Length: 243
Image (cartoon, rainbow, N blue to C red; front, side, top):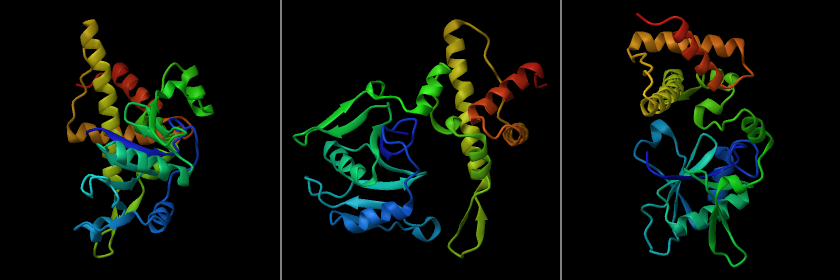
């Protein structure tokens, strides 16, 4: 976990909504910036290269300056103020925003000083406005359309021996974790209100059935969000309590 800050064009958070940042775009930024250098990890042969280090940090240290491309975002973990300032500069080249885990955005004022503000002060994008009308803002996998979920669970990658290794199972677990987090949040509120908890269990067999349900729902409703698929699964268990 920890505190992440990211460069993003995600329309739910960015004032500059657009497509995901690609590795090609990120590599082009690295190559053109003399202060950035590629970081080649020991397991790069298995997972590829997606990380850069900032070599011009004021303290002269490169540790703690890693920036990596993940799911269309450029991410830094626990960045200090100088690194966030650098991220704002990089975001300008990518026509993107710098946003923190708590929804705050970062930018530079006219004097070059780092300033931040709450996401609520930003003009809402069309997608944000639609979600606000629904009475909620979705984060993470739940905000993805069902057809995106179906696409991602069929993605594949290559290992060091260039054999095709499906990542479908990992992506299914990723989305299933969002579902479990959703249930956890409901139970947290129910605990405060004294209501009974939702207990579905986490056995492998149950998980497989749940994922099959989510896939079937997504195939039937590709334009809805994964959140709607999760809600349908919750209602399914309410109507058909597990033994």
